[in-house]
Length: 324
Image (cartoon, rainbow, N blue to C red; front, side, top):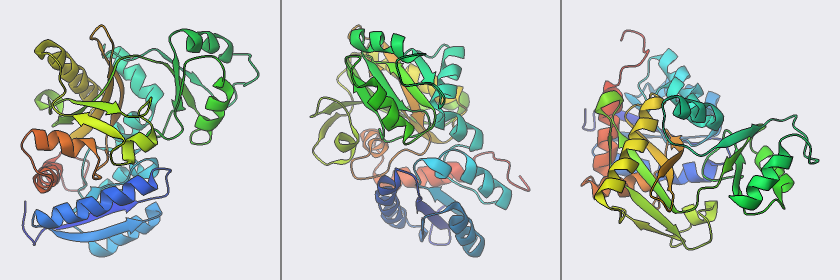
């Protein structure tokens, strides 16, 4: 697969809270695929119907999904493209749906014995007046610390890290503004790591580990997307044994959800050297500060080569496409 005869529509934008990140990813992917020698079609959209109409008219050879969050990453657009018989980049509908729902993905991690922090879901009907789950959570926040985040969102939007019981109600309210269901997760002190995983099933492998050192106290949305706000060390300065265990945990998480082609797995490394998987991203960022391109470069793949590999592997992926 390659050359100007191959037409790739880059889907980006959308209407999720991660729209601005997606706009940056989409522009970068458009330029990178063009540099890789493909004919690129601009798929900047706001709604799924707008995207599907664009696909119907253009009939591209592949849709490269640079959408983040919402219908672009939770399996809905992937399902629609399969019904249309159009190949697309990344994982299939089921893996995308599982990865987007942090409660469900954690349950799968635990079933597959993938290390992940303890967590509890706060439902939309749970009271915020100190009754129910919030009472015990205050004690946990005051001890180990607590991360409160939307169950179905990414890019660290709506996330609060608490080191005391104060502010718990506000943290839940903030997370609820992005998702009805909220996850309260034990905070793991230590290092922030991320691993790009390539392939699927038993052939999946980890690219070089990245350590993230935010200049702020925590790796917030601003620390992620403001140039110079974080330091990225790739490969991470870890000993061989720790590196192997971090990579193994990332690959296990990728496989547990049935991811295809590529993903990015976010982890914490405790002071004792134990990795904990936080979440899996099936449509990770592709901006100038994004992590998958950094890991790929450390593995010897420049950005256009990474995109070419994603496009080629995605076109070969086994999907539920008509006629396949």
